[in-house]
Image (cartoon, rainbow, N blue to C red; front, side, top):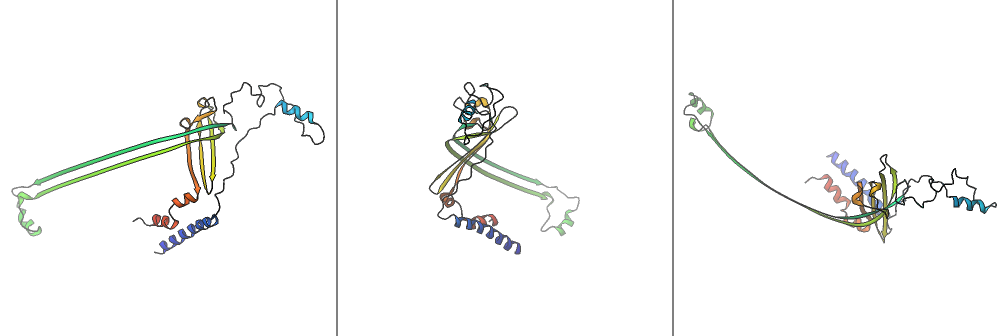
Length: 254
């Protein structure tokens, strides 16, 4: 009993902390989370920017950038006249097209029945029927020593139905390149309307060959895809059960 009281008190204290947090948020819109720091490799400055810095001169001009080791347009960070504009390096951005319209239905039915009957007896039980009469209740009939019957039946049915629809577009960033050339991507989008904030998160692995010419990729071409669409705010809180009911459901199994 003492343990139950301690558990209830602890759960009440923890839930009270959550209630205090809700009280602090009364009349306030949910805060947007800070933007994650994305990896951005160093890129060699353009020749045009260096020339402009050198021509500016004067004490207030920007510091002169050291000349590049090469003046070729095909070096890393140089001109991109002939380079594929699709994402392929850490820090590049590509567009993820999310169009989920999944439906699933499962219907199972099982019926089972079984019956059995056993009878056995002997005309004489080696003379033991007389001693057994003093042990067993009632008269002992050797021809009906064993008489059993059993019947069992079971019936089960189950049905599952799901329908999901998400149609959104999000820009993701390349956060890593695997040894085989596949790209690790991650994207996050938050939209706040009045006092409700909607959040879309996507991450996974894509092949550079699957990226379209317009630098976009479909969600079905993302391996190990993790797509989360939800939100927080007043409407979301109204759809959740109160903390007292949640504690009751967690502690009482009946």
